[in-house]
Length: 187
Image (cartoon, rainbow, N blue to C red; front, side, top):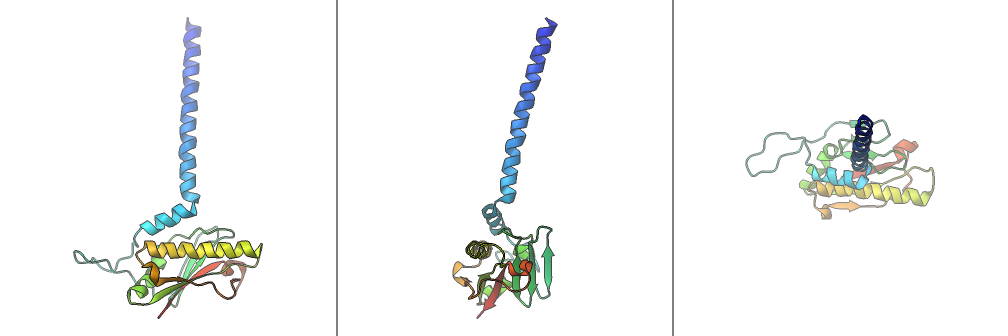
C-alpha cells in the first residue's frame, strides 16, 4: 500500500514539475521575443510619449518637449548608441542590428520641436564597408525606416519625415561610426 502511495506521489511530483517547466519555457520565449524583436521594440518606442517635459501643461494643451542644446551621448555595451551634435541626431547601431539604443525618444526631442516649428526631418541611413554591400544597404534602409516609424509614433506627421538615400551609403569614420542613421532638420 505504501509503495503505491509512494509511486503516485513520485508521478504526481514529476507531472507537476514538467508542467512548471513548460510554463517557464513558454514565458521565457515570450519575454525573449519581446526583447529581441525590432518591430516590437519600434512599436513600443513609438507608442511611448517622450518623458522629457519642461513644465506642466495647461489643461487640454500638449506638453512641451525639452530642447537638446548640448552634445548628448548614450552608449550601451553591444555597440548601439545615440549622439546629438548641433541639432543632428546620429543613431549608431551594433553590427548586423537595427535595434535602437535606449533614449531614442528623448534624443529626438529637438527634431520634434523643429518639425513643430515648420521644418522637415530628413532621415538618412549609412552602413559600414564590411560584409555584403547589398545586405548592408538593406540594413541601412531598415534602420532609417525604424527611425522614421519612431518619429511618426511620437506624433510627427509622416509628410514631415523624408527618407533620403545618400549618394554614398557607406558611412565615414570607423565601422562603428559608419553604421548610423542621421536625422537633420531642413527648411
